[in-house]
Length: 192
Ligand SMILES: [Zn+2]
Image (cartoon, rainbow, N blue to C red; front, side):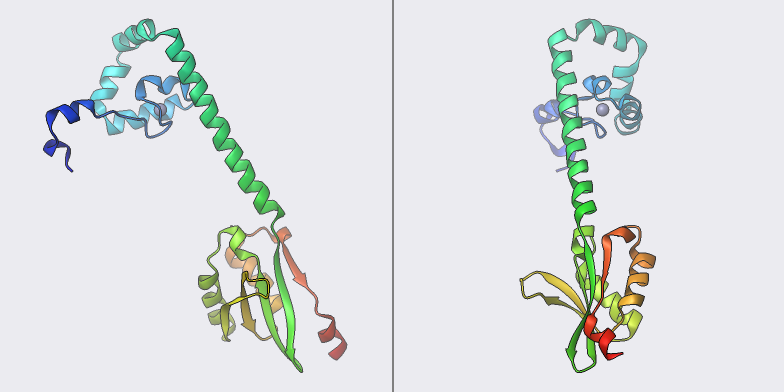
C-alpha cells in the first residue's frame, strides 16, 4: 500500500528503523556504525536526518535520552554485533572443514567416470556446475544421488586432473584449493 493511501493515524505511527544498524535512528550512535548510519538516513529520510542531526537536535537528544535507554540500546547493539560475528565464524569454520572430492571411478573395464562430491558446502549450485562441466568437457554430466543419498556430480570419462584445474580457475573465488582433494584410483594406475 502506498504511504499516501494509508490512514493518517497509521502513517503517524510509521516507525523508521535504520537500514544499516536496524536500531531506531535516534540510537544509531550506539550501533558502532554511526557514520554509515548517518549517511543512510540522510539519503533515505532527509527530513528525519535534518531533525536528528542538526546541532540543536543533538544537544537536546543527549540531555533527554535517559541513561537506561542508552544502556539498553548499547546492550542491544552489542548483542546484535556478537550474534552476527558468531554466524560469520560458524560459516567460515564450516567452509574450512568441508572437503570437495574429485574421484575417478571405474565403472566397467577401462570406462571411467569422474565424481565430484561436496560442492554445495561452498555455495555452488550442483545443477549449474554439472551443466558447465558437460559443456567444458563435451561429455555427459549430471547431478546424481550417492549411495548415501547425498547429491554429487557425475561426469563421464576420466577428467579429474582437468576438472580440478577448471574448478580452481572458474570457481576459485568460492572454493579454496586446499579444500579440494583429488582421489587417486589405484585400478587405473595398475591398468596403465
Ligand atoms: Zn543506524
